[in-house]
Length: 243
Image (cartoon, rainbow, N blue to C red; front, side):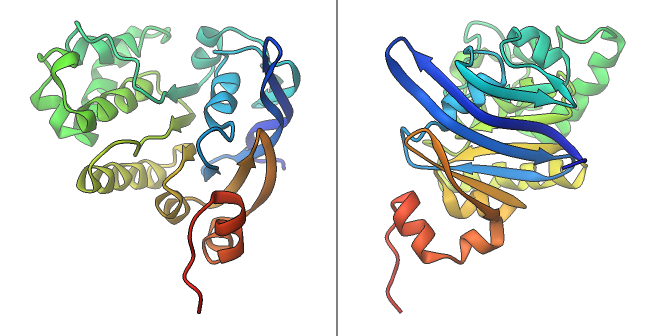
């Protein structure tokens, strides 16, 4: 696909004798939202961590803007325009909201861009602006997810990966977060979204991939997968109502 920013082919990750993922392939075109779906333990987090350089691949390839990046260190990957908002947030809890955000911009060569990026994040997440001097460890779960996402945006990525952004959050917070993701999409940012919240992910995504036991087992347009009850029952473990 000529407009692909990211291409993953037959990616494998091992932790000693344990297989993290065995055979994952996906493509993320520029300007699109791609969902990575699967139940807990399917390999979504390992896939994103391997793309981001947090764990080394044992096989396969990761190509970013035409260049192989599999095995490169995380700082080099994020500096090249690919950022991850991780599951569990991984914030510096003793630092303030603004300090955490500024840490996300350390890879930028031009530090003069930091104020404008900071204001962009505060515009997307006004709650963070209200709490910019507050320690990250005192934030609610929803606010921590906003901060993790905002910190990733501070590197001004071309592609933003989000790992389980709705996990453990109240429905109203999730709805607000997904409205923000929709705004980022309208602004032209490319997104790769790993989620267990299938309906939410398919609503915002253009295309989706389903993982099962560390392998890509299905892919297709998000609208098509959203309407396929067998897909949801077999691959995602969701109950469907018989017609």
